[in-house]
Image (cartoon, rainbow, N blue to C red):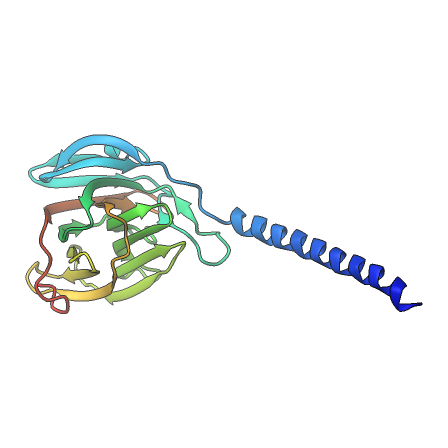
Length: 247
């Protein structure tokens, strides 16, 4: 074979290789897209509970709540959760009922509540949650949740494309106080057993957009319903004075 005849054949091989590579990239991209969670659609609502005006919701959450004597009851139907599985998408779900109020993230804010989830013997991952959400792939859940051993835990789940899952302290009581606070640059999550002394469990850079939603949710990912109670809801335009102490 002469050098001149070799050049066209080499070019054809390169083109074929590029074509195959392109096809593989498209196949890989298609496979990746297939494990993404379905896009969530925010719905409008007009509901005031615990002194908080809720204007947005997921999955018709307004039908799941009621209030009596300052206590909000939030009923989560079976198989409701909010999670993007980082592995094989088996646990991915966007069925949770969530009520939101809107905040200006260019200003400080603190959102807090006393929460009592509907723990049951079979209620794996049942939880009451505080939620911070920008969109369907950028949010945080702050959960008081039942784990695999039936223990009740402080849990944080941060989603940036996919969800992480962090189990923190075991809590030996059926209620807890939660607080999420931002100074516009940093956002942190705290829990308290008495509403006075706070423990920080998570702190990260606040890279959420200006238009942000904070809210409450009750979840029942596995078996049965979860009837959670929320009280002492507070939303202020102030931040904690000490991010380490939460006060």
